[in-house]
Image 1 (cartoon, rainbow, N blue to C red):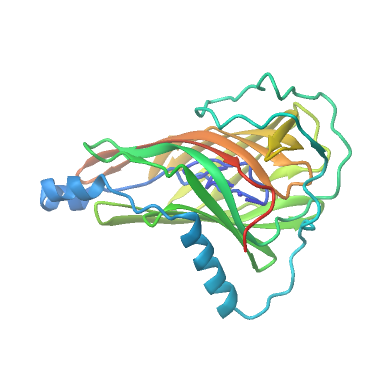
Image 2 (image 1 turned 120 degrees about the horizontal axis):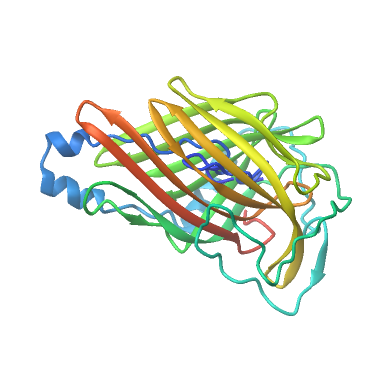
Length: 325
Protein backbone atom coordinates (compact mmCIF):
# COMPACT_ATOMS: atom_id res chain seq x y z
CA UNK A 1 0.00 0.00 0.00
CA UNK A 2 4.36 -0.59 -1.87
CA UNK A 3 0.87 -0.15 -1.56
CA UNK A 4 -1.04 0.04 2.32
CA UNK A 5 -4.59 0.82 2.87
CA UNK A 6 -4.91 3.41 4.51
CA UNK A 7 -3.66 1.09 7.23
CA UNK A 8 -1.36 0.37 8.87
CA UNK A 9 -4.40 1.48 7.94
CA UNK A 10 -5.47 4.54 9.14
CA UNK A 11 -8.65 4.39 9.69
CA UNK A 12 -6.77 1.32 9.61
CA UNK A 13 -3.39 0.48 10.48
CA UNK A 14 -2.06 -0.97 7.32
CA UNK A 15 1.54 -2.86 7.52
CA UNK A 16 0.84 -4.14 4.14
CA UNK A 17 1.96 -2.01 3.24
CA UNK A 18 5.73 -0.78 3.68
CA UNK A 19 5.67 0.76 0.58
CA UNK A 20 2.72 -0.53 -1.10
CA UNK A 21 -0.35 -0.07 0.63
CA UNK A 22 0.48 1.37 3.39
CA UNK A 23 -2.81 2.10 2.63
CA UNK A 24 -3.35 1.85 6.25
CA UNK A 25 -0.11 2.66 7.43
CA UNK A 26 -1.29 5.22 9.72
CA UNK A 27 -4.65 4.73 11.23
CA UNK A 28 -6.64 7.86 11.00
CA UNK A 29 -9.69 5.99 12.19
CA UNK A 30 -12.36 8.23 10.77
CA UNK A 31 -12.94 11.34 12.78
CA UNK A 32 -16.23 12.40 11.27
CA UNK A 33 -19.02 14.85 12.06
CA UNK A 34 -22.76 14.80 11.44
CA UNK A 35 -23.21 18.54 11.89
CA UNK A 36 -24.73 18.81 8.43
CA UNK A 37 -27.20 16.06 9.24
CA UNK A 38 -28.25 17.65 12.52
CA UNK A 39 -28.67 21.16 11.18
CA UNK A 40 -30.04 20.44 7.72
CA UNK A 41 -32.79 18.47 6.04
CA UNK A 42 -32.64 15.11 7.79
CA UNK A 43 -34.34 13.11 5.04
CA UNK A 44 -32.14 14.60 2.31
CA UNK A 45 -29.00 14.14 4.37
CA UNK A 46 -29.78 10.49 5.05
CA UNK A 47 -30.36 9.85 1.36
CA UNK A 48 -27.07 11.48 0.41
CA UNK A 49 -25.23 9.72 3.21
CA UNK A 50 -26.20 6.33 1.86
CA UNK A 51 -24.37 7.01 -1.38
CA UNK A 52 -20.75 6.75 -2.36
CA UNK A 53 -19.32 7.40 -5.81
CA UNK A 54 -17.18 4.34 -6.68
CA UNK A 55 -13.88 5.00 -8.42
CA UNK A 56 -13.55 2.37 -11.16
CA UNK A 57 -10.31 0.82 -12.38
CA UNK A 58 -10.66 2.68 -15.69
CA UNK A 59 -11.23 5.98 -13.89
CA UNK A 60 -8.21 5.47 -11.62
CA UNK A 61 -6.09 4.60 -14.64
CA UNK A 62 -7.27 7.66 -16.59
CA UNK A 63 -6.45 9.93 -13.65
CA UNK A 64 -3.02 8.35 -13.27
CA UNK A 65 -2.23 8.82 -16.96
CA UNK A 66 -3.41 12.43 -16.91
CA UNK A 67 -1.17 13.27 -13.94
CA UNK A 68 1.78 11.40 -15.46
CA UNK A 69 1.40 13.32 -18.70
CA UNK A 70 1.17 16.68 -16.96
CA UNK A 71 3.96 16.14 -14.43
CA UNK A 72 7.66 16.75 -15.16
CA UNK A 73 9.80 13.64 -15.34
CA UNK A 74 10.85 12.80 -11.75
CA UNK A 75 14.00 11.05 -10.68
CA UNK A 76 13.18 7.33 -10.84
CA UNK A 77 12.44 5.60 -7.53
CA UNK A 78 13.80 2.16 -6.78
CA UNK A 79 11.34 -0.23 -8.36
CA UNK A 80 10.83 -3.89 -9.03
CA UNK A 81 11.64 -4.84 -12.64
CA UNK A 82 8.48 -5.59 -14.60
CA UNK A 83 9.93 -8.95 -15.58
CA UNK A 84 10.21 -10.07 -11.98
CA UNK A 85 7.00 -11.36 -10.49
CA UNK A 86 8.26 -11.06 -6.91
CA UNK A 87 10.99 -12.30 -4.66
CA UNK A 88 10.12 -15.94 -5.37
CA UNK A 89 7.63 -17.17 -7.95
CA UNK A 90 6.67 -20.60 -9.21
CA UNK A 91 3.84 -21.90 -11.39
CA UNK A 92 0.83 -22.90 -9.34
CA UNK A 93 -1.87 -25.44 -10.02
CA UNK A 94 -4.54 -23.53 -8.11
CA UNK A 95 -5.51 -19.92 -7.70
CA UNK A 96 -5.73 -18.03 -4.46
CA UNK A 97 -9.06 -17.85 -2.71
CA UNK A 98 -10.86 -14.53 -2.58
CA UNK A 99 -10.12 -12.39 0.46
CA UNK A 100 -12.06 -13.45 3.53
CA UNK A 101 -13.76 -11.35 6.14
CA UNK A 102 -11.40 -9.15 8.13
CA UNK A 103 -10.32 -10.52 11.49
CA UNK A 104 -8.54 -9.06 14.50
CA UNK A 105 -5.76 -11.55 13.98
CA UNK A 106 -5.71 -13.42 10.69
CA UNK A 107 -4.40 -16.99 10.89
CA UNK A 108 -2.65 -18.89 8.15
CA UNK A 109 -5.04 -20.51 5.69
CA UNK A 110 -4.72 -24.25 4.93
CA UNK A 111 -3.19 -23.61 1.50
CA UNK A 112 -0.69 -21.06 2.81
CA UNK A 113 1.38 -22.55 5.66
CA UNK A 114 3.45 -20.22 7.80
CA UNK A 115 7.19 -20.75 7.65
CA UNK A 116 9.24 -20.28 10.81
CA UNK A 117 12.34 -19.39 8.86
CA UNK A 118 13.10 -16.01 7.34
CA UNK A 119 14.06 -16.74 3.73
CA UNK A 120 16.89 -14.73 2.31
CA UNK A 121 15.48 -12.15 -0.05
CA UNK A 122 16.39 -9.04 -2.01
CA UNK A 123 16.95 -5.71 -0.35
CA UNK A 124 13.77 -3.73 0.32
CA UNK A 125 12.51 -1.73 -2.63
CA UNK A 126 9.50 0.31 -3.67
CA UNK A 127 6.62 -0.60 -5.94
CA UNK A 128 6.86 0.33 -9.61
CA UNK A 129 4.60 3.28 -10.49
CA UNK A 130 1.21 2.39 -11.90
CA UNK A 131 -2.29 1.29 -10.92
CA UNK A 132 -2.59 -1.97 -8.95
CA UNK A 133 -5.98 -3.71 -8.86
CA UNK A 134 -7.36 -5.46 -5.75
CA UNK A 135 -10.36 -7.72 -5.27
CA UNK A 136 -12.16 -5.95 -2.44
CA UNK A 137 -14.77 -6.72 0.22
CA UNK A 138 -16.08 -4.66 3.11
CA UNK A 139 -17.88 -1.46 4.01
CA UNK A 140 -17.79 1.72 6.09
CA UNK A 141 -20.58 3.30 8.11
CA UNK A 142 -21.52 5.77 10.85
CA UNK A 143 -23.89 5.27 13.75
CA UNK A 144 -26.77 6.85 11.82
CA UNK A 145 -29.35 5.23 9.51
CA UNK A 146 -28.53 4.57 5.85
CA UNK A 147 -24.87 5.54 6.22
CA UNK A 148 -23.36 2.18 5.22
CA UNK A 149 -21.32 2.21 2.00
CA UNK A 150 -20.17 -1.12 0.57
CA UNK A 151 -16.77 -0.91 -1.11
CA UNK A 152 -16.64 -1.73 -4.85
CA UNK A 153 -15.71 -5.33 -5.70
CA UNK A 154 -12.49 -4.00 -7.24
CA UNK A 155 -10.47 -1.06 -5.95
CA UNK A 156 -7.04 0.28 -6.85
CA UNK A 157 -3.87 1.48 -5.21
CA UNK A 158 -2.10 4.02 -7.41
CA UNK A 159 1.66 4.34 -6.98
CA UNK A 160 3.40 7.56 -8.11
CA UNK A 161 6.98 8.80 -7.70
CA UNK A 162 7.20 11.66 -5.24
CA UNK A 163 9.83 13.11 -2.93
CA UNK A 164 12.17 10.52 -1.44
CA UNK A 165 10.12 7.60 -2.71
CA UNK A 166 6.53 6.99 -3.79
CA UNK A 167 3.01 7.92 -2.75
CA UNK A 168 0.46 5.11 -2.67
CA UNK A 169 -3.20 6.12 -2.90
CA UNK A 170 -6.25 3.97 -2.19
CA UNK A 171 -9.49 5.63 -3.31
CA UNK A 172 -12.53 3.34 -3.24
CA UNK A 173 -14.96 6.27 -3.47
CA UNK A 174 -14.68 9.87 -4.60
CA UNK A 175 -15.64 10.56 -0.97
CA UNK A 176 -12.88 8.41 0.56
CA UNK A 177 -9.17 8.74 -0.20
CA UNK A 178 -6.03 7.56 1.63
CA UNK A 179 -2.49 8.44 0.52
CA UNK A 180 0.74 7.21 2.13
CA UNK A 181 4.28 8.34 1.34
CA UNK A 182 6.97 5.67 1.76
CA UNK A 183 10.72 5.65 1.19
CA UNK A 184 13.56 3.15 1.48
CA UNK A 185 15.79 4.16 4.39
CA UNK A 186 18.65 2.16 5.91
CA UNK A 187 17.46 -1.17 4.59
CA UNK A 188 13.79 -0.75 5.48
CA UNK A 189 10.69 0.70 3.86
CA UNK A 190 9.78 3.70 5.99
CA UNK A 191 6.34 5.29 6.27
CA UNK A 192 6.96 9.04 6.09
CA UNK A 193 3.41 10.40 6.28
CA UNK A 194 -0.21 9.48 5.76
CA UNK A 195 -3.18 11.54 4.60
CA UNK A 196 -6.84 10.63 4.68
CA UNK A 197 -10.03 12.34 3.60
CA UNK A 198 -13.54 10.96 4.20
CA UNK A 199 -16.78 12.78 3.35
CA UNK A 200 -20.22 12.05 4.79
CA UNK A 201 -23.34 14.22 4.55
CA UNK A 202 -21.39 16.95 2.81
CA UNK A 203 -18.86 17.19 5.65
CA UNK A 204 -15.24 16.17 5.12
CA UNK A 205 -12.84 14.89 7.75
CA UNK A 206 -9.27 15.45 6.58
CA UNK A 207 -6.17 14.49 8.54
CA UNK A 208 -2.44 14.39 7.81
CA UNK A 209 -0.19 12.24 10.01
CA UNK A 210 3.60 12.58 10.16
CA UNK A 211 5.41 9.45 11.33
CA UNK A 212 8.42 8.80 13.54
CA UNK A 213 11.79 8.25 11.80
CA UNK A 214 11.59 4.56 12.78
CA UNK A 215 8.07 4.04 11.39
CA UNK A 216 8.22 0.97 9.17
CA UNK A 217 6.11 -2.07 8.41
CA UNK A 218 8.78 -4.03 6.64
CA UNK A 219 12.15 -5.41 7.74
CA UNK A 220 14.42 -7.41 5.45
CA UNK A 221 14.70 -11.03 6.63
CA UNK A 222 12.57 -10.36 9.71
CA UNK A 223 11.90 -13.38 11.93
CA UNK A 224 8.47 -14.59 13.10
CA UNK A 225 7.70 -13.16 16.52
CA UNK A 226 9.77 -10.04 15.93
CA UNK A 227 7.89 -6.87 16.89
CA UNK A 228 8.39 -3.11 17.09
CA UNK A 229 6.45 0.08 17.87
CA UNK A 230 6.14 3.53 16.36
CA UNK A 231 3.79 6.51 16.32
CA UNK A 232 2.30 8.86 13.74
CA UNK A 233 0.72 12.17 14.78
CA UNK A 234 -1.57 14.83 13.34
CA UNK A 235 -2.33 18.22 14.86
CA UNK A 236 -4.91 16.72 17.22
CA UNK A 237 -4.41 12.95 17.34
CA UNK A 238 -1.73 10.28 17.72
CA UNK A 239 -1.78 6.76 16.30
CA UNK A 240 0.37 4.42 18.42
CA UNK A 241 1.18 1.28 16.45
CA UNK A 242 2.58 -2.11 17.34
CA UNK A 243 3.70 -4.34 14.46
CA UNK A 244 4.64 -8.01 14.72
CA UNK A 245 5.80 -10.59 12.19
CA UNK A 246 3.50 -13.61 12.01
CA UNK A 247 5.54 -15.60 9.47
CA UNK A 248 6.26 -16.27 5.81
CA UNK A 249 3.45 -17.58 3.62
CA UNK A 250 3.01 -18.40 -0.10
CA UNK A 251 0.02 -16.77 -1.81
CA UNK A 252 -1.11 -17.44 -5.38
CA UNK A 253 -1.85 -14.47 -7.64
CA UNK A 254 -3.12 -15.14 -11.17
CA UNK A 255 -1.44 -18.56 -11.33
CA UNK A 256 1.86 -17.47 -9.82
CA UNK A 257 2.86 -18.30 -6.25
CA UNK A 258 4.58 -15.52 -4.36
CA UNK A 259 6.41 -15.72 -1.03
CA UNK A 260 5.03 -13.13 1.38
CA UNK A 261 5.82 -11.83 4.84
CA UNK A 262 2.73 -11.62 7.06
CA UNK A 263 2.69 -8.68 9.48
CA UNK A 264 0.00 -7.90 12.05
CA UNK A 265 -0.45 -4.33 13.25
CA UNK A 266 -2.50 -3.02 16.18
CA UNK A 267 -3.27 0.69 16.22
CA UNK A 268 -4.58 2.72 19.15
CA UNK A 269 -5.73 6.26 18.36
CA UNK A 270 -5.76 8.94 21.04
CA UNK A 271 -6.66 12.63 21.02
CA UNK A 272 -9.81 14.22 19.60
CA UNK A 273 -10.58 10.87 17.97
CA UNK A 274 -10.22 7.59 19.83
CA UNK A 275 -10.36 4.01 18.66
CA UNK A 276 -8.61 0.85 17.55
CA UNK A 277 -7.66 -0.57 14.17
CA UNK A 278 -6.20 -4.09 13.94
CA UNK A 279 -4.92 -5.08 10.50
CA UNK A 280 -2.96 -7.82 8.76
CA UNK A 281 -0.66 -7.29 5.78
CA UNK A 282 0.97 -9.73 3.41
CA UNK A 283 3.89 -8.18 1.49
CA UNK A 284 6.24 -9.68 -1.06
CA UNK A 285 9.52 -10.44 0.70
CA UNK A 286 11.24 -7.45 -0.90
CA UNK A 287 8.53 -5.17 0.50
CA UNK A 288 7.52 -3.86 -2.90
CA UNK A 289 3.96 -5.16 -3.17
CA UNK A 290 1.04 -5.42 -0.84
CA UNK A 291 -0.42 -8.77 -1.80
CA UNK A 292 -3.21 -8.96 0.76
CA UNK A 293 -4.65 -6.75 3.50
CA UNK A 294 -7.47 -7.36 5.97
CA UNK A 295 -8.61 -5.38 8.97
CA UNK A 296 -11.19 -3.21 10.68
CA UNK A 297 -11.60 0.25 12.17
CA UNK A 298 -13.65 1.17 15.24
CA UNK A 299 -13.46 4.82 16.34
CA UNK A 300 -15.42 7.59 18.00
CA UNK A 301 -15.25 11.35 18.08
CA UNK A 302 -17.14 13.58 20.49
CA UNK A 303 -18.47 16.98 19.46
CA UNK A 304 -21.03 19.60 20.43
CA UNK A 305 -23.83 17.52 18.93
CA UNK A 306 -22.92 14.17 20.45
CA UNK A 307 -20.62 11.26 19.75
CA UNK A 308 -20.05 9.93 16.25
CA UNK A 309 -19.06 6.29 15.83
CA UNK A 310 -17.25 5.18 12.66
CA UNK A 311 -16.87 1.50 11.71
CA UNK A 312 -15.08 -0.09 8.77
CA UNK A 313 -14.14 -3.62 7.75
CA UNK A 314 -12.13 -4.46 4.65
CA UNK A 315 -10.31 -7.19 2.77
CA UNK A 316 -8.13 -6.66 -0.30
CA UNK A 317 -6.22 -9.14 -2.42
CA UNK A 318 -4.00 -8.28 -5.38
CA UNK A 319 -5.38 -9.37 -8.75
CA UNK A 320 -2.18 -9.01 -10.82
CA UNK A 321 1.46 -8.62 -9.85
CA UNK A 322 2.00 -6.08 -12.59
CA UNK A 323 0.51 -2.56 -12.52
CA UNK A 324 -1.53 -0.99 -15.29
CA UNK A 325 -0.16 2.21 -16.82
